[in-house]
Amino acid sequence: MNTRLSDLARALRGPVLLITVGALAALDHFGRFNFGQTWPVLIIVYGVMKLFEIGTRRTAAPPPVAGGPL
Image (cartoon, rainbow, N blue to C red; front, side, top):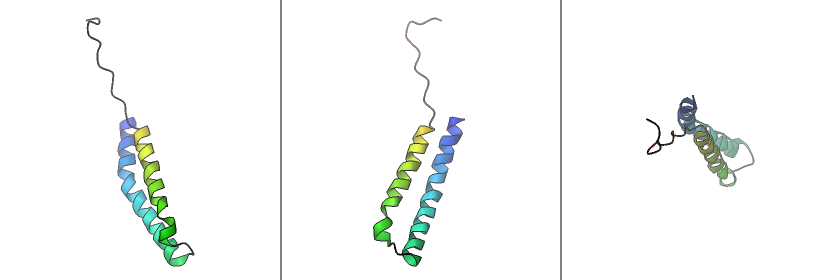
């Protein structure tokens, strides 16, 4: 299940960043904010998406202990 969430997070990262760029461009064009003021939002969105991806990543099983039961 975690693998699917991690794959989903990885697949959504590009579209979410593209939507963010579009929203910032719209704010630049129609609003009082210019892109020079809002570009750090891209870094924040990328960081949040990366944290979501890492948080949903499946951890590997620990290696077997040498000399353990057979």
